[in-house]
Length: 310
Image (cartoon, rainbow, N blue to C red):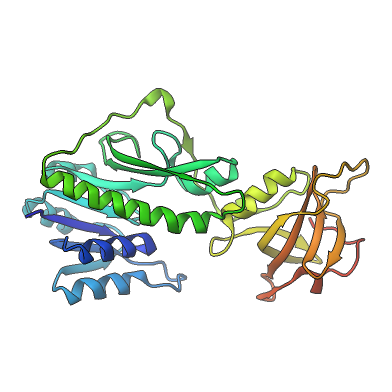
């Protein structure tokens, strides 16, 4: 019988542990991520409820304690699954288990090691991404041996959130495949090609600001990458901050303008407003006034083609 522990939280951790339990792969125990105080969605409660229903020991916290490491050491685990955990885990846990720690990274490693790989892939206009199931190594983050990978095409109009939901399902399938192969001693591990490695930096909400002198391609990719429920791409108008929730390329995107004021509204209609970029146009169909906490069609806020977003 496979013995493993689960460490994780957020939506991806909840979906994974639900899948594992439904496939009769119950963890020996679990450490669940405690959300930050401002987070409304409490996946920790949902995960704890699932585990309690099966009589599985669990605790909720933001980082592992020395007592957690001691429990791991004493449990003779085959492996540990980490999904949706936000703080560093000491790599010494690899020595406490038979097969180490496994995790899913939302890219085709060694590409896009680091933070927010899915968002960065959309920002960069990639046509495909994927999921990599890998072992947590003793080197830099996301550099461990690859267990399996699966590619996923990125649709032209897909947002990171839409892709995220697909990738979670793919990742869960890879975890199940891993457990099946582990039970038959048929897991193959592949070293990552360091010469192909690329890296991403951490993103903060302020990185979502739109600079209208950029091309419509660049702006549209940013909007898709951080669209709701992520922090959102934003701009300013009339001393208010507006987060763009829905947008598309404008009807005049392919027109060549000899006179351009980036951010200038060129059309107001039933489906929103069309805005000039450094090259091309963007049509905004829904945005949120963060000062007033109102979600509206921008045509209710902008009523003149003299208006300029900044």
